[in-house]
Length: 140
Image 1 (cartoon, rainbow, N blue to C red):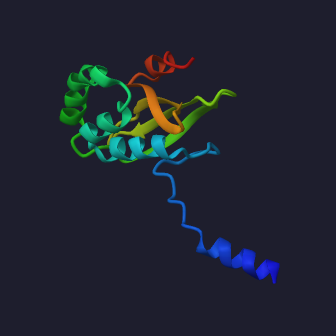
Image 2 (tube, rainbow, N blue to C red):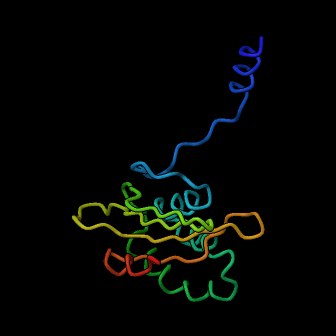
Image 3 (cartoon, rainbow, N blue to C red):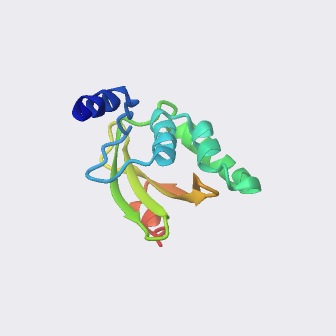
């Protein structure tokens, strides 16, 4: 009886959506995945809004880079893969995700750092560039 109840409860649990990028063994975090989904499809304004929710006036510093991204990649990217994830004991998570650019051999790299603030996961830092070295400089 207990097994039947457990099976029924598990079947009633909401399905977790598959991560938008290949995770390569990393754990998916909803706040990071939502931002990566916008970046992937080329909705860079929505990406900036989601990724900078706690930046306040710092959001304005993204206007020019976001406009450049939109001009260069209006249709977004072909696919993405999370190539690095660090989880710190205090709760911070850092990721580097690469986004495949159509007809090129080099990817766009995106760094996102998130942590729980007042119980809600928030992105606290981001960086993107076609030079993975510049993005890796953001790792702490």
